[in-house]
Image (cartoon, rainbow, N blue to C red):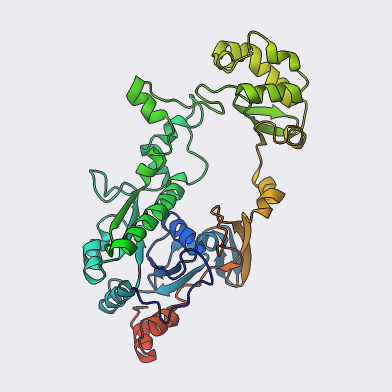
Length: 409
């Protein structure tokens, strides 16, 4: 059993007692480990003493006495401990292996081959801890012709096909968030937990290989199977759907809403809400199949929905439709932050970093026995050195002082 003596553990959470060594930077890896930390894992963020995670300086940042305090960093690194460590130094290499002996999981997002160059590849880690789980997140995976290509989120959106089916036919567009990073982080968390379950059952750890390109491909809905089955190449549909109608963006008095009353049941409800009951039995549009016909939709259905929405504000439409059929205001971020439903579900939470409080997104995983994101803190670089190296690994104060003087930590 992995030793947790001397290591402060989370007060609660499904993963309480699980120790994760986090070698990740920027978004994909830190998002993965953030999710696991929120669920109770003890996450030790490991950064080079002279080259910490560059997102410590990412905007939005508050500048206090010429020191950047980043809300971006706080959001993705809450609930973590932090140590500084030079993995290339002989003493740093030994310290890391000591941690591996006592940990359950190592997560990294270096370019493939980097861990092997450091003599810290999966085989090396497994030799000293057969139950260790190692998760690697990269642009194109650990193997394959493109494995060594550098990548960012947009690399994944481009190479995974998502960019080509988003936006409009005239102008394909990148999805407006780092979906390649975030989806890889989510799949990384899922794969890590699956491997941890196997390690707990059999005592055998394994290497989890997560590719941003793979992650994006899995998010392209029916585009891939539609091509392999019919030869049709998906193109951007704008704010509509390839075949479901009415299902898309419509203009209202103060913005836009998503209107999705396409089934026969929801269409009846919409006709009743907007006082057009006669349309329910209109022989030209009285079934879903008829409304799906593009010519019929453009001539008969779209003008009706446009008229309904244009007469009301977003709030009025949301109130009118209630639970009767899908209609959602297309909210700006300030409206999302002010949404009482979002607030009640703890999706806007405070996180403290270097004495400053930031409101960031919460954890969408809600567990009846609780998680740890509310009131969380993000760590300063190396702030947990004594706790980890002295309290957990048992190194003396003199050793730690010498390591610090030599630039190892």
